[in-house]
Image (cartoon, rainbow, N blue to C red; front, side, top):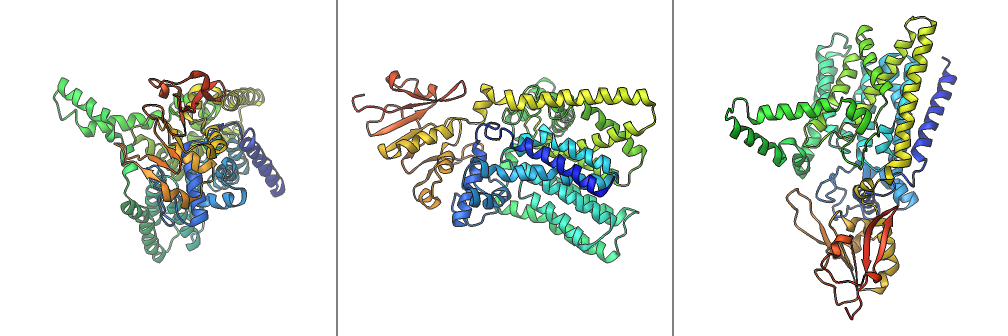
Length: 542
């Protein structure tokens, strides 16, 4: 295939990806969730003052809701916020660009692994139309940036293996370190790929590295490995620890129940219970239920019948695995490592199958699917067999792909569970507050299901210095999360009775149970068919 033709096809595939990233972008996702707003406002605060919302200068962790978010997404978003202002589009724009750039990146990685332009272009096409990719890349989620950095690192590792050089080695490991400042799963890939590189340097018979570079490389790998964990030591890692499987109360309760029924500690102990739980969560991420039907158990990232890949891709993944070993591809072990390491992050938590924590799985799966498709269709089987295979596989792929996109773009965000999971209604609430800000002394706003303060900061472009001067915070709860109790005119709590001062009360409908109000004076914020907030302005006579 000629170079100009390859470039033209690759650009067309990128155009398809761009279209799918921006089509209905103002409708899906329909709302900005609190984590997105937090990344946006912290980026805005850093842009304006050099400090985050807590007044910390250029921090390596964003304290945010006391979940200590990794900061790289916020830092890289500042140019877009500077150019377009603080809004939903500017906060999500970075991920849209990254999502489109995954197409040429996966092409380059596939070329290094398979040495075949057709396989590389098919890999790019599968990535370009993947709902799995875009469920996250159409929102401001830091996992997309981390995956891009890890995949970029893989590309430079492959280039290094082909022709060793200091530049490639340093870039590969620099990208790995950066990935750990974007999303926590980056640490798993850092450890895995550092060990892989160390093995390649010292034990692989194909390694062409000199003895000096081997020793120097070991030092570089050690520095890359420990640097993110030193930062963890400085800031603490409570948020990560709280997600580990043994932190869930049900883990110990079930173990105690088993011991009461059968007091055999050789079989019923934390080690065997952990092995069972982690293994089940690990292998569930390869299941058809996760990959083809439901995806993430959190409605913010998945829904029934919204598959992450199609049955055709799932089947061809196994075909690709077969041919990878049959052809004895030189880079097969790196590809297999990426596939089987990707689910580890979520397996170690107490949560169910997670699109976010297994996000990187997409890339080895689609690389294998592309390779399996190519190999199966190039094996000599006869004209009629090839035609039947093409029609069958093509129909299977297109039917389920279009079904997944139809659910995502036309049905997913119309579901009540999804609307509430995405914390919809806060934008409209903030618009109401802005309109009536000068008319009242106090706004009482419920904090039952979210962090309302971050939306007021975000949508009102509240100056950080003004916020710092008046913010009042609660102590962290049992999960390590703190709440903003109030700032400026805002109190984030429902009053037990109607206030006598010049105030407005905003809550969910059930927040007003037990409070005597005039129902005819209630204003409502609706999102679609869902009634989200009630707004009540008491009169002095009440």
